Length: 302
Image (cartoon, rainbow, N blue to C red):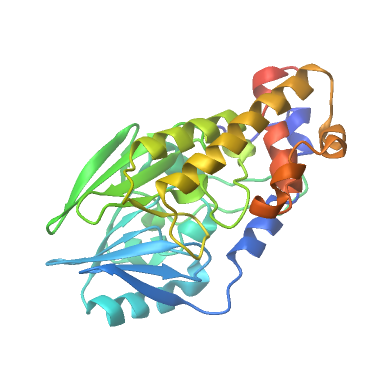
């Protein structure tokens, strides 16, 4: 994890990242869908999240954006019944997933995350040297129980397993598996509404995304319901497998282009993803940021 960089590769980097994430996060209203007894999927809060009921109160996996925090808490209480929200899992550090941190942290909740997620949430992040800073969260809103590899959490009769997917989207991505409900939460690694875009300034890269998909698939059976970052439908194992095939091929093609001396504009002109637009949408940001994510690995002096 690095809080800042002066390398030229990073200086011209993700100028569109914040805009793209805000566009993905846009939604007209919040919706709730019960996925089982005491388990609700909330969408429209900037990113997907889960809320679980157990005897001590409520547990959240991701939190949407902070501007939706009050509405998220009201909706969860309406669907699951009132009670203190005592535990929150952050799958990674991005704002559209950590919007409950301030409210719940102020009330003394346990906030679980990877250690790198805590570090990003405790420092100022800039995607371009003259771009707007992303300020650190207050101390009470930062994760207070961190892991390097993963862990388990008992939530009533449900058991949550969370584990690291190294450099799959950022450098601190956790998946969360609910054993009894057979639900898998991907965090930002799987977009669900288009191409997954690695945040390479904070440690993600395309090969990490490919590995992350493989890790997620290994957690699935044919009946596993997969909650993606932004999708409005639940994925199945077959959806992950289909996207993995596309991503694995393109990661190899992008590496070949890097070694051949291509730049980002050359990659876009070559249209390596043109056969997948119907399924995945406009690949411009995916190709640009995935290609740039190779710079620190394949062109360390660029």
